[in-house]
Length: 394
Image (cartoon, rainbow, N blue to C red; front, side):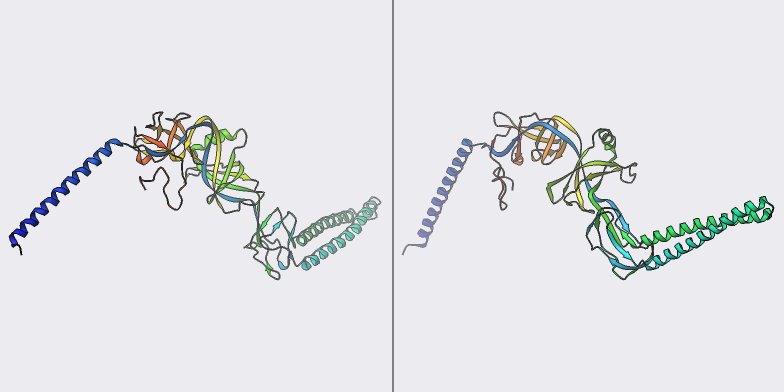
């Protein structure tokens, strides 16, 4: 058995040997890393790019709009009575003149007959009074009757003439009330919720209405824009009608085309906006009263405007900017002025020329003068980042 001191010395020597070897290996690894960094010091950053396009671009005002019925009528009874028949169902489309409700007509038929009988009686009395007035006119010339008697006969005939006219008005009123027993649609439209059923009693002009009838072909979309745009809107609307499009927030790909047909006569002092309305044909009845839609009002057209994909425009301390890829593959930051953003495109009035290549993805990994390589865009799938962002900012 070796002495304890000898074993300790051997262990120490072995530890020093391992430590020295580790230092040497670390130095070699560091040297290799430095050499590798020098060989590929700044690899090109993968980015996606697009070309700035020069084209005519419409100048568009956007707003949130509300769909409104073109006409809305609250159907009410004009006479009191019992609902004998409901001829329609809730949500039904009706035409102007279609029969909606029938109120019990019997009391009004009786009133009409009574008025007609009174008219006939007074007409008969008028015939007799006219004949007597004529006779007295002849007799007073021969002094067979006094002038007073002749005047009384003439006055009686005149009074009966007025009575007949009043009776004729009563007959017309009775006929009108009888006609009111048949409630018909005043416009084309779609019925809402029925508030009465057969057998219910109704009052004249009572609240709530029997049913509401909305005209939805055509249909309105109401929206408001800042008052600063009013003068331009009025100037452009003085010519051809301005085009308006509407889309649903959850279905921007579906567009409806209409025209501006109404500008309110006063600015809302509370909001500083002006109310506008556009009319849409709505032939397929896709637009429904009460819906919210995104509205785009085309004011004019910019000729030969420069457009880039909206994702190419970034915002920094100096304002909006884009990265332009130069011929040598390096990037250059250009401060730009954005006129509008619409349908995924940004219209640029300064800072970019038609044909320039701009970075659309990967801006967070580059800087002015950085070397880039253009890769085709890839749609993210299952949360996988695109080619321009793999290995970079996630």
